[in-house]
Amino acid sequence: QVQLVESGGGLVQAGGSLRLSCAASGSIARINVMAWYRQAPGKQRDLVAAITRGGSTNYADSVTGRFTISIENAKNTVYLQMNSLKPEDTAVYYCRFEVTTIDYRGMDYWGKGTLVTVSS
Image 1 (tube, rainbow, N blue to C red):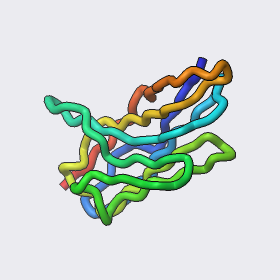
Image 2 (cartoon, rainbow, N blue to C red):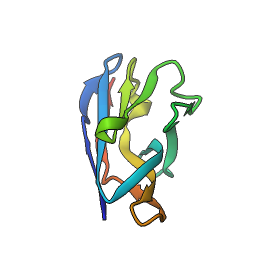
Image 3 (cartoon, rainbow, N blue to C red):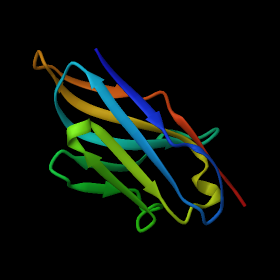
Image 4 (tube, helix red, strand yellow):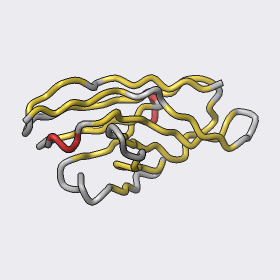
């Protein structure tokens, strides 16, 4: 079993910054990809940023240059530094880990989500 625990959401004014974190624990042999998604009210869940174990990154166009994804492999933790926040960044943010478990299964896990609200 693998658990993901997110933290760092909250209320911030436009132009401000927040840092989200997501830590994984449990029966993990290797984390292959870590990603952040977001879902605004009435909209689908979209990819925000992703990073591989080797450090390759991918960002949504809407956050490029403002958000930075990073990892701390020793702690099985992924971060999302969000700068220059805009009201349209308001959403529930979810982390997702693609892992290989200790019994060599490829699995996908999601966090429960953390709310980010950006006021204008």
